[in-house]
View 1: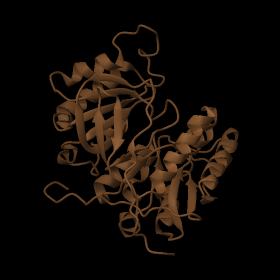
View 2: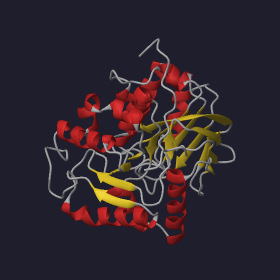
View 3: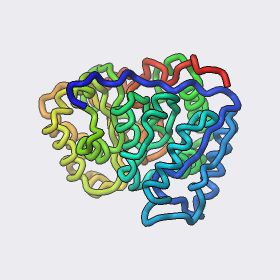
View 4: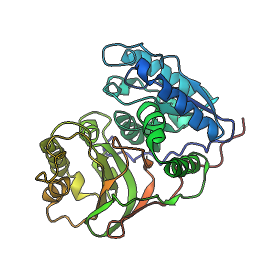
Length: 337
């Protein structure tokens, strides 16, 4: 890809009332215990005014090793959804460990011909990064069925649920910039400053590993970007190492700002008074790079996700603890029918 012009930003068409949203297994299998989570997800999207269907591989108990099916089977189902003009958005059921197996099997021409929102985080953030690199597709780093819409959302206060539902409806249907995302008191200024640039990010280990594939984002795509990342599991030292990989690769020299999600289940960060803190780890690796850092933002594994659409310009003011989406994630000129 080096030496060639990057793909232009590819926005999906805005969804309309009655459009079909499909919930699909793009990675991990569906455990029978999480069947109610899928049903709650269906209800969320029906309240937004959409029709909802489940893809065939989203069947409790179906699995192949740690996956819902073989990579070829998942790719075939995903490609079918990408090619089906009735399907207007795809919601991942869960994350997992599977997306690496079918990156080379995705029908990128179908995406270019009819781009659709693909919603998810965790392992699905790998799809967002790779498809953004290959086609310019806006990646909807957002909640998914089992841990998000069907899990974290019902556990949130009713006012927060209503706020999120309105936000996601605007994200998928609105052709005006959302503006400031709804913040909360957990957000922390780790280094003051302001930045503006395209959002690029996901789970930090997927960002690093994606760069080792033939589908990596060219380094120049990080120029001026607002890098967002989060992590689940492992050790605090792993996060430090991933950040150093991005330092060595030149990514940290190119970005204009950083947004860090709430860490979850990371050994060494869980205990009160743990040292180093995540903020100390980040600032240690950044060194004298004078870029704003906003920490402890609620996206990723730690709770209901604020949407972080990959490729969309964002404005960050770390001192004021604000993060704004400066342009819409969808376009409004989709052909009727």
